[in-house]
Length: 87
Image (cartoon, rainbow, N blue to C red; front, side, top):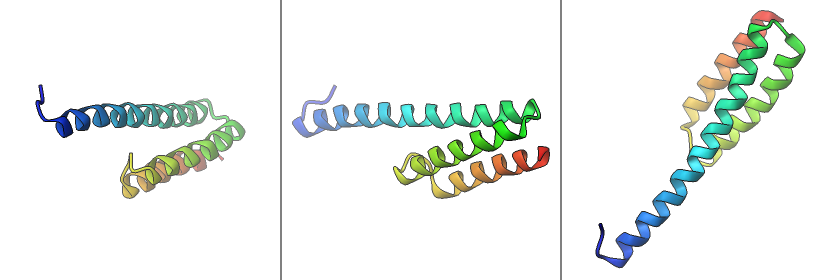
């Protein structure tokens, strides 16, 4: 355990940030899963709607620094490609 006051504060701040990042990643994963489920069911309308939501959440996560910008681009690209295969 840390003895220095600033080190103790860093531990608290890191826990807060980790919880925030975990929540954001969880939200992104849920959105991605909805798109993949719609693609598996060959439901183009639902997939397109879910894709729009997923892209918004992925970009938000990238803007907050949870994901690297290239990771965001890769995720969006793969989802878009999957949705376009059933259209």
